[in-house]
Length: 163
Image (tube, rainbow, N blue to C red; front, side):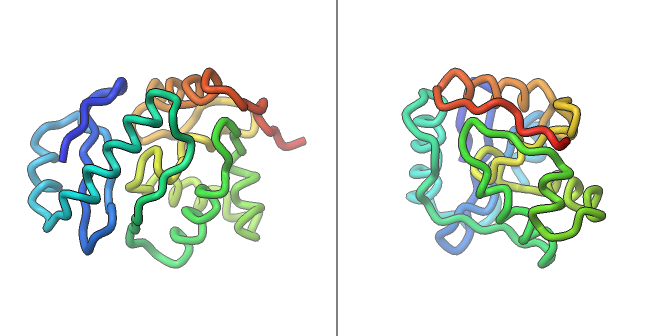
């Protein structure tokens, strides 16, 4: 199902009564592949309504079931991403520390980049240790917009930099 957001089209797909992908659409051909999955229209509509509420500053958390398949390491990283509060950021180094392996910074960044649930699993809240907006698969401009949107929605806490 497609949703026209302030950041362009978003494709929402579901499987087994759970949202399995929320992704920005830059190439219409890729949309056809995703839409062909078995879908649950009701859960997709619920997701789109909650995304709409997010964009209108009426929602900070999402309450529909979702799941994405990945390695056990990727799933650990994605669970840590879910813990980053609205309006907060952490660094990739801090993310690797939180998963228990400071040396896994590149692996954590890679897992972050493989997140299929944009906005829902807030990978946009992870930044470079120096505060740089690095590494967002959907474009740095979208990451910047999302962070500014959350800052404007209130409750923004300055970036948490590593010493």
